[in-house]
Every structure is written in C-alpha cells, then in structure tokens.
Length: 306
Image 1: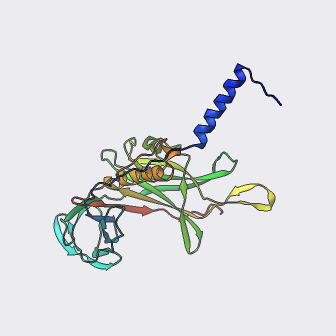
Image 2: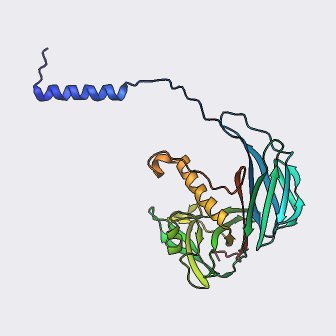
Image 3: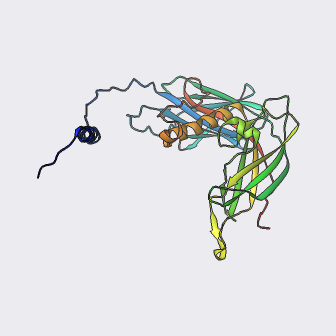
C-alpha cells in the first residue's frame, strides 16, 4: 500500500515528530553544587501574652544537611523588665524556659540568651495596652458563596486611639463541643481596613481608622455544613466568641510575612507564579527568631442557633 503526502501533509508530519521528540525525550546533567557555609546561631522564640508567664523557646539554627540538634537545656535566659533585671528563667524541658512573674501590658521585656560557645542573643518587645470591645453581634446569613452555601459573619465594635499607631488581630473562636474549640476561617473580606492590608488574615493597623471606635464586619467559614431532611445544604453554626488582640509591631510584621511564606512554600505556582523565597521577620540580635507579644480581651459567647 502506498501512502502519499502533499507539502502541507509533510509539514504536519514533521511538526508532529518534533513535538513528540520534545515532549518524550529529556537530557540529564549532574550538577556539582556545594551549599554555602552556614553560620550556626541561637534561635529564640517567644510570644508574650499579658496576664501569663513569659515562656521562651531556645534552639539552634543548623544547615539543612545537618542532623537535628537536641533541645538546648544549658542556656542562661535572663529577663529584663523596663531595663531592670527581673529574673533568670527556669528550664522546664523541650527547650522551654519559663518565668515566675506574670507579664503586664505597657511594659518592655528584654531577653538575653547565652548558650556556651555562642554570642549572647538579645531581643525585646513592648506589650501594648489592650483596647476594649464595645459591642459584638453575629450575622447568621451574611452572604452566599460560589457553591450557593450561606456563610455567617461577626460584627465587632472596638476602641481605638486615632493619634497612636496601633496594630490588631481578631481571632474568632468556635465552641463546637463543650470541651473542644476551634478557630474559624475569615474569608471574603469586605471591610476597607482589612482590604487595605492586602492579605486574607484578620491582622491590621489603625492606619485608616479615624475615630475613637470602629465597627468591623468579618465574614467567616465554620468549615462544615449539613443537609437536614434533604432540604439543601446549610452551614453549621456554633457558639462563637471573638478575641480582640492589641499586638506589637513585631507581631504584625511577623504574622504577615509568615502567611506569605506558607503560601509560597505550599503553593508556589498558584500563588506567585514562580518559586520565591521570603525571609521571616526577626528581631533577635546575634541569632534568629522572634520575640513579640500582645494583650487581649474577649467578648461574650453568642449562640447563633438560639
């Protein structure tokens, strides 16, 4: 049997062959790469909450090729309050050091961490004064998502100091069972203050807030729905409570960069188009990590089902 091609057919066959070769052939080359020398340093992490003891975690930063280092149990961790020596923290295990005193707002806390063989790591933060919740409401049906499922929202009014730069975080807590709570997932922001931050997390500054109070609406998802009596899927609602945190600047910077880091490392192609790297914010001298803090108030618990 004889098969003939015209010029157009020949070009098509050649083009198909070149595409086939490109897709199904590959070339491998071994690269000799030596990772750069990594300077080991102490890692100090701590989130100080007003009304709780100060807990500091101490570890060491090592290169990705090194074996994990054991918990640092021989560090000396000294705590200063408003530049005055307060106490030496006690080691309680798992690399954790804890104070006897209880942290208070409107005070500066400085930690000096000394590990034998390393320079002293120094970090500090100021715990801001809390701002009060003036009013708290719940909206059972705030909108409908793309799948036709309704979602709720919280509406919280809180105090503000318009002449002072403040930073906040709103945490929504769901009481799914008597002995179990979970965090709600804010999404579909409509509030201009939250939209100004550019990230889908409820962390914000008072840059756009002019008055002494502000009312913010935050849509959220409970993460579950039910189809009662085949009447259609409805979002499950749980008793809800709002925590308003007045956070320090280091908390604000770190939590935003942490979100970008998690998005970039988990979904690099979908989020930024190309793989990138983000350096997490650190305020530790002679080391890595973060020392930060906040004060907070909580609202009453509202049961949307009642």
